[in-house]
Amino acid sequence: MALIFFGTPGFAVPSLEALLSAGEAVGLVVTQPDKVKGRGHVLSPPQVKERALSAGLRVLQPRKIRDEALIREIQETGPEFIVVVAFGRILPSEILSIPQGGCINVHASLLPKYRGAAPVQWALLKGEKVTGVTTMRMDEGLDTGDVLLRTEIEISDDDTAETLGERLSLAGARLLLETLSGLRNGSVVPTPQAGEPSYAPPLNKEDGRIDWSKSAEELSFFVRAMHPWPSAFCYLGGERLRIVEATPLEGRSVPGMIEKASQGEFLAGTGLGLLRIKTLQPEGRKIMPAAAFLAGRSIREGREKLA
Image (cartoon, rainbow, N blue to C red):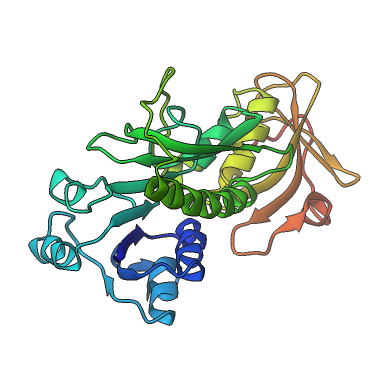
């Protein structure tokens, strides 16, 4: 029997690749509509769509998840399972009830921790040392379904949402194949989620604005969590700066105050400690080391602030 795959961003591509490599019959791929991106406002397809089309798969991009044509297509396909990886919308009961084996979700956290749209970013924001991937049988709630399998991933001190997300996506692809195999042979048994849930709400562009009243350690987590999107940013005068890499230091200062901007060192005050800005990107320019940014600039240490 065929599978139907729901997914949208790059995080979902390894799972689709794994299904194809394993010889699974993917009868239909459902993804979000193309979106306008970048300064050129170019209409761009989701990464899942690009991979699906390159594999010759049928692709649907419904604007509404309760679209009658979509539901009819799913019913006519008669899937054994629906596999959902970072699709971006909650599936209604009309779809959840169609596949014989149920709807299987690959979620980038150790549920019930970090239910929601941005589990990778929130694990970094909270300074977690370990996260992971969970496969679950979906219900109508927000990531509340029974757990099928889980795998843990350690978070390194230099992980960003990008690097951690890449590792989790690959782990999720492997776990998906184990889950499907286990469901078919009966070795995987759905188990209700246990423990206190936490949530990972979606982020928007303004969520990247740096709050200098937070501690240096919190801001170092923040910078890593916001990379590459929506990115951690602040302003020096009227200039927008995207902070790409930063580490915490001990010290005292006024939040946002530039304590050092010389000899290649760019240090700013926080609510507790100092933040060493190592790599940044001025608006309209390339990412650069702090030393390159500071070269030729005259910043008044102890008098100018980042806001």
